[in-house]
Length: 410
Image (cartoon, rainbow, N blue to C red; front, top):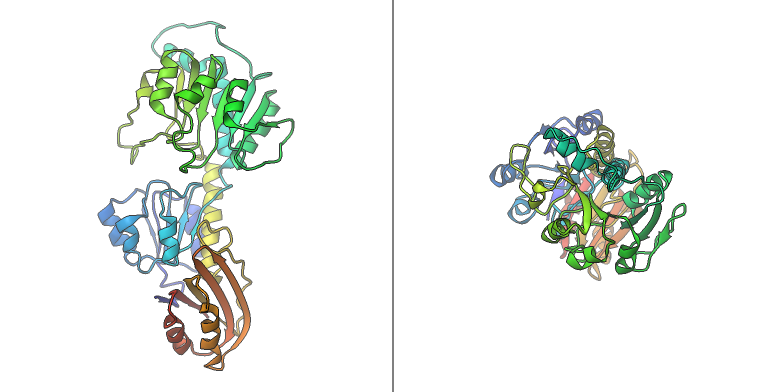
């Protein structure tokens, strides 16, 4: 049970892994000055020291907020992942501690889609192999296995924000697009939905993956699926490293069943730019390997910095949790200057709301507005009240069984 009623000057904001400086600028413009910037990923020992008194945390993809790292976050009230993915965070663990997690699901969509489209063009023209040979002094001028994009069929697995954006780019290049998604998605342009992955694979020239890292997508593309692809086709993975079975991809390339591939993500990735990159795919000239840079454009990083920082500031300033990935979503108005906002995060059990109301009525405190939302086993109730002193009501709210956290805004 925690009470947080801190001025902006006392709220410690930590931004790790070289988050774009626009995030810091946004915090400072809003009055947050206790900001700590780290351009690298701290090891677990250093990270735990940092987290012991951090209120707002910003990370990218390398920092692991799980296990013992999460256990020391006694003061942490919000986390921002300055990227799309959140698998580096124990979302349920954060929720159980009353910590909402925010990400940037849209900000690098265009950047990833453009990289994939560029890789498709390069693969179809056989550029990776020609480029590699030229670097070794070999002149490999040939039209063999070199094709235009026009008229080729692109298969997209996962027709979300990136997959659908790629569809638009591919159709503009004259490609036909077929896609498979476990959720019914409205086709864009002339694209065509396919009922299953196995139905999709034999119909396409290029396979591009755009699914999240879940139990369903682990090792989704292995030997069986690659065998269903037509001989001479290509595979692109800019989603998550565990989706493709690398050993099976190597086998398909050796047998020349696939004529090439492009990967931006890998099952094991170096922790920093100083660490070596190892992969059995290094030996193939017809494979494009990029260091998880799908969203690494200046435009995307600026968009991400502004989107995630804005969400964190809104939560800190008024309690809004819109688009939180692990938390009840509530969009709240600006707090009226004459009111106090009381936020109660609790286990979602019968009777708690009644006890919360009783805590206020027993103190003759008038509730001017109330907002409530639940998500699974956690509830989030926000009350704007006429209350000059909050000490007594905080004690009563913290005394309610099932209370996870109480926050006060004046």
